[in-house]
Amino acid sequence: MNGLRKLTPHKKSLLLTALLENYPRAYITGYVLDAYISSYCVVGRVYKSPTYPDGTLILSEPITQVVE
Image 1 (tube, rainbow, N blue to C red):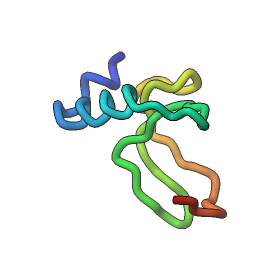
Image 2 (cartoon, rainbow, N blue to C red):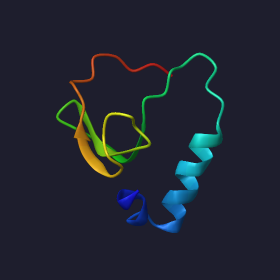
Image 3 (cartoon, rainbow, N blue to C red):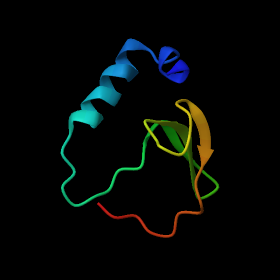
């Protein structure tokens, strides 16, 4: 919960909106805020993940495909 206190009210609102969204064909493992692409990877802070504490900075594997 400590990582949530660092979020601005606007970012908390965005996270809440994402949490309330219905994703019927997806299994959500966390939400990434402040995400950006760097060297073909996603960098950002993860929230509401069973694996990482809120606010943990993560770096993804290289992006191999983008799907809309």
